[in-house]
Amino acid sequence: MNYQWIGFNIRYYRKLRGLTQKELANGICTQAQISKIEKGEVIPLSSTIFEIAQRLCLDVNYFFDKSLYETTDYISVLMSEIRRLIRDRAYEELLQLIDKENEQLFHENDYTKQFVLWHKGICIIHVQENYPYALKVLEEALNLTYTDADLISEQEIEILNSIGIAYDLNEEYEKAEKTYEKAINSWKYVPNIDVRVKIRVLYNLSKVKKYIGDIEGSKKTAEEAIRLCIREEQLYLLGELHYQVGSCQLLEQQKAGIATIEQGIHILTAQRKEHLARMQRELLEKERVQVEGSAQT
Image 1 (cartoon, rainbow, N blue to C red):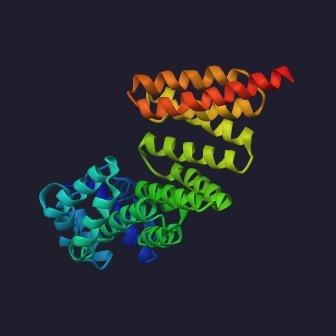
Image 2: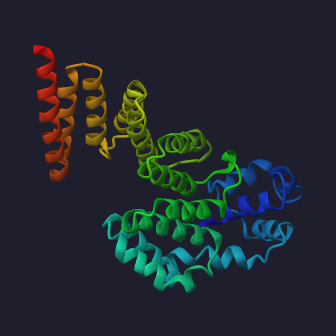
Image 3: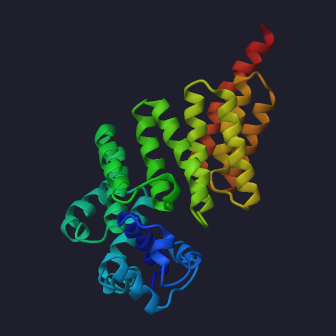
């Protein structure tokens, strides 16, 4: 049984009914216990879930039946396939799958519908390159559950990241920057958030800051992400982040940027990301020529 899913929906419907945690807990359990249930930190008693469902005017079977879907039914298999296609960057195939299974998917709960709309928006970005339409789909996905920054979920943080990417590709850099910063300011409310989500948002924010000319801000953001990689023993985007820092250092006329980029290339090579390593070598040679030319003049 997926207790995090139960907690997610208890929080969602509590807010929808306009109840505080204390009001929901009254006569059932403590406010602290409601908080832990909503965060997925404790396994609630079935009797507790029953009383909570009654107070929220929901059928208790809503929690028990739906919370089993990730490991038992067809929707679980479908969502796993969506994740696989995203990992493989098979965006066109995924868009066809979503369109084919549209009727089944959109009869599910808000969490599932949000998941599907989010990935549909990603596909529109990469397949159709229709960024305004992608933004519309992604905003629709976010608004299915999003109420305020204090009650944000990890999935909502990831959707904000995708919205930022759509703004970025549409060359709306200031909107992209604000969206990434909104995600960063909100993730403190998400317990046990995947560190890779944080790294990804910081990396994207660093790139946007560089586009708008905030070189120092771009460098500091990338350095923050690198510190996070090191602290959490993560290689995720570490090579790319070194390129970000190094390119900013070169723009600031710091020769150390060449060594930083070379370090990133070594990391990418070790990760067998040869195509990225090759791209960075080519960019490094251009940067090296520019630096040497500046030194001679």
